Image (cartoon, rainbow, N blue to C red; front, side, top):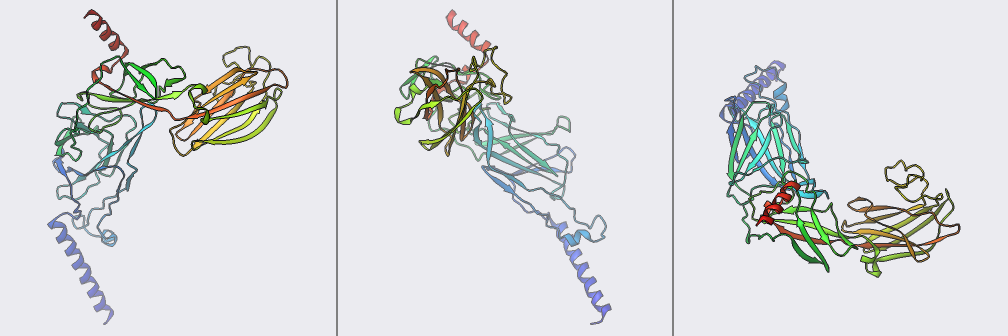
Length: 442
């Protein structure tokens, strides 16, 4: 075959390919992904399409079906297939930072894309709209702090932690920030429809219950529960060795929603919290590591101990003990030396040692007690923490030369506690005072 004939054949093949591409394009969109619903947008050309609702991890990786060679050819704009850029979306299915404990909540993904008048995906500037889920009661599940939304080239993925689960149909509103009052309303079959098998009944307040042998009285469940963290939960115990952990509170409802933003129309919310040990006396002897006759070095001298022990899967380490100056060791004593620069509130010249703990599970607490000649001179609990580590800076008073101390380190698991509370009992401190006055009037 001559070169001219070969060129003619190639040209005919290219034209045939172009004609086929144009024919296919005229018959329907190239993207054939299934979708749940779509709503026309205000420009009269584009539509917003709801592609997926996925609970948990989600990976969405779309590839433009147009062959790159076809996009490179110098074709008229009407024949040239539109190129739609896309960035892969990948989520791990978890929302973090809910509640003061950083309680993790399963994430629900709502994936939307813009299509043009022919049903083709379009690179459309959405400007990160807002997604609101609307319950049949009228309650609106708005976006809360810490929830992540992804928006790029006409594709947006919203992540939410709570959804209406009592409604057979799921109603959603997408509001665009950069286009006035435009809002698009979607209504689809609710994949999370799950009315509770048994309704929860709130416990009248004040409520006293026993957890792990400790009587706990709930006077007031808290405030700011609808939109964010719960604060000022009023719990009382008579056992001062076990105290409520004031950063452990979170709520759920009977339908399976957890974290802030629950519907106030639920009959009851379940308030969760933890009791944590505040002293060695609250811990069984088999969970206490005792290191006796520890010599306290002179001021400025560091003595490595490098002792390790394990209790209930928690690896404890007692590293270095540091001697202190006279009068030091009291954090609020103005006559002591300057504070350490690490922000710990510990005086620079205080006698001290650090206890570190590491574990493969997060449900543990560490308490420390230091004794001298049978007298307790320091108690400490809590300390710096991550989910799987604890670090306690143990500071004690100046002792005579050649003194020896006894160090007790205890490990305990916190005790879970829960109360069923009416959403009406949550509110501000002023609301609480007003309700108490109204109750007193009869």
